[in-house]
Amino acid sequence: MNATMYDLRQKEVINIRDGCRFGFICDLVIDTDEGCVEKLIVPGPGKIFGFFGVEQEYHIPWDKVKQIGEDIILVDVETSKIAVNC
Image 1: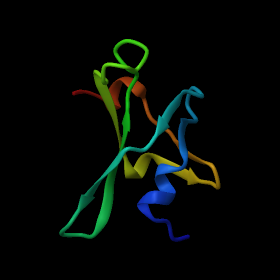
Image 2: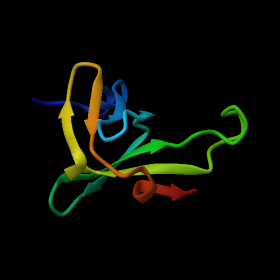
Image 3: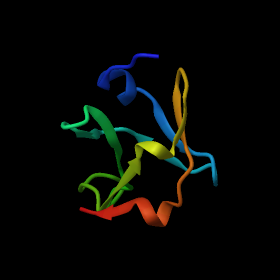
C-alpha cells in the first residue's frame, strides 16, 4: 500500500490497547539517511476547549503502528510513554 502524507492526515489514530482516540496526524518524523518514517506526531488535547494551543503532543513510533485502514490507523502504545510536552 502506498500512502501520501495527505492520505495519512485524513485518518484518525486509535489506540487498540484502550480504545483511546488520539486524533489526526499533524506531522511525521522521517529518517532522511534511511528514507523511512520514524514517528507519527498527533496533537494532544487543547488547553481550553482547544482554542489556545496544545500542551502535549503524542509521538508514536512507527513500529507501534499495527494497521492502516481506509479511515483509521491502529496503534498499540502506552499513552503515558508517548506524550511529549510542547
